[in-house]
Length: 298
Picture (cartoon, helix red, strand yellow):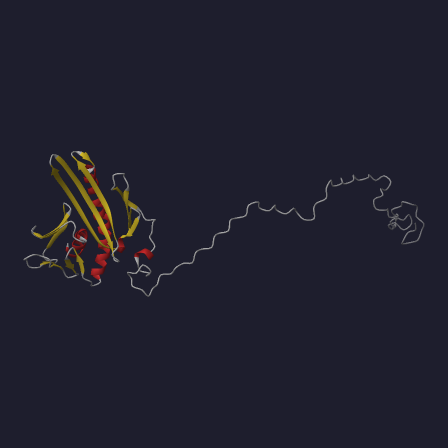
């Protein structure tokens, strides 16, 4: 090994030149073969062999043993015929073609049969005996309650019957019926008579009130509406169906009050005198207290 600056021969392993003091050139060693340890060098530990090689692709998900059922094809929808009369069952405005909401709040459940079956009065419809009527579709509501007794030789009998009848614009009718029969003192007459007042009250406080809202809207739009034989408009009401009497006019000037008198409706003037009384089976008579009081009261 010689000095790179002055060329003097340097002993092996020298770091600096003894003559000029320059750094001695680095001694080059032969490259070792890879994997062959050099003398004095610790041999590295070998990596453990893998027990199983990784699969090239992960295993596929197993197939479902039960396939999802295929939904049956929907039947073709029969669209209502818009060219027919509104009273025709295929007309879009026919009650049976209108969706019936069933998610409104239940206001009253009134048993009307001897087995306890109830009539359900919701906010916008009533359900009974498989029927569902929206209040806005009911054209006429009337009620009737009759109690009778009789004798035949030594036998005594009696019965009580009551009904609330709903009539749609197309003429379809359905009744909520209450009935009880007694022979001597045995039977269901007394039970039927007890079931009637709650049923009548629900019809008056729920159904009649809802129907009256629609009637008031029509009157305020300028229509004349007949309730129990009384022609009602925004300006006043006139009852012409009187025997041997002049028509009775009801206005804001003479109207006093209108309400129930038993199961009938009574109208009085501002001085407490009776103007008119309707029977319990007069069509839409139960709407009169709501309509007349709103239009002419106060």
